Length: 320
Image 1 (spheres, rainbow, N blue to C red):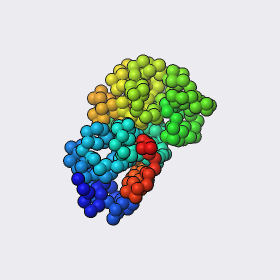
Image 2: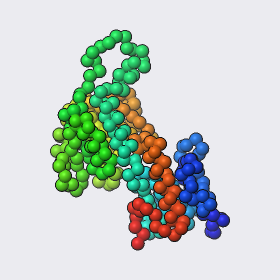
Image 3: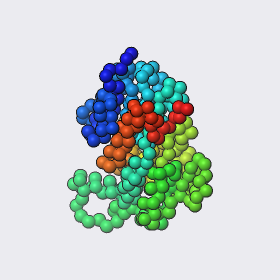
Image 4: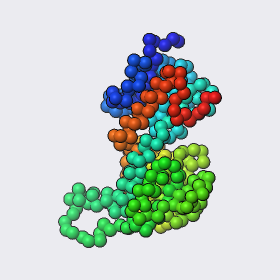
């Protein structure tokens, strides 16, 4: 199949004009639905035979099926830090670059983490519901009291850019931060996973989804957490066994949880939606106006580099 006058580039959602500038006049852009939702896989596969590049939000599985449909594909750029949607070995074999973005979302995700930490510890969601539902009839001192953050221990599982940004922010609240990574960091505050779980008042997840991290937080490890502690997940939903989390919350072993990602996203375990000690958000932790703009622009610049015969930046599968 020969290309049309310009190579085709697909982005699976609609984006502002400003971020498209790097490929203007160099490629024909195909965008997802105008309402901001993501293009479904069936439509991507229909378009795939013409595609030189794809930009997606890390929701598109780049697997054998897609690559068979897309013989001219040369780059898939994730507008995300995660890469678990890529079959990296097969993409390398087919000569297709896989890229993600650097740390544009780190500050935004760290802000979100502190935000939900405050919501949980100060029981803000419960108090807000109480007022909105018309139940508030009189001042009741003590009813909504939660723990003071100062002096508490925050355990960060994963210690990349996001977790480090969380630690910097949390320390301003007088929070003691410890961390765990698969390979010891040698830094003050490093703990084994067992130690971290048993010491932390709040456990926050900031690690990629891999074979080793799927259901890393299971019933046994939830049982190792302190009674009355909190869990925050802004990483990947499948790192947490949701059924085990529900059980830990229903028993009262955990005081609360905040989840921005889910095991079977966008489906949410129905028991979680009924719990007022749980904060649930639709995968928004890294999303601010500034971070989203920078990440999208970076992906379009990588497409432009590839069109020019240059290597893109932030490659996660070396083709050499």
